[in-house]
Image (cartoon, rainbow, N blue to C red):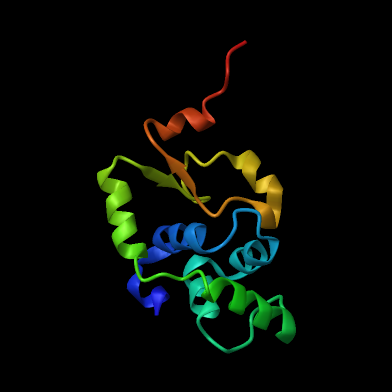
Length: 124
């Protein structure tokens, strides 16, 4: 299972960014309720999904499970070696305005260079 291969919220959100479309409100709703690690586990399970009725959960799982590839842990290492970084909502540099998007908020932001520039006020 993918959730067992990845360690922590950041890795789970990175995997979700590969599996789910960026504007997937259903995934965003589940993610907001249970976090990234549990969202991945729920994709690969058969139990109830918080906030979804049974038919909606089945369709959501079917759609996302088809996108799971065995490569995410290796892809994460390759991205880091290429100089890419990530930001998640708990990071200080996360642009808080993105939280206004609620369930359509990005799972993760991929960065290259100084991520703190995303929260630096612009001078007119």
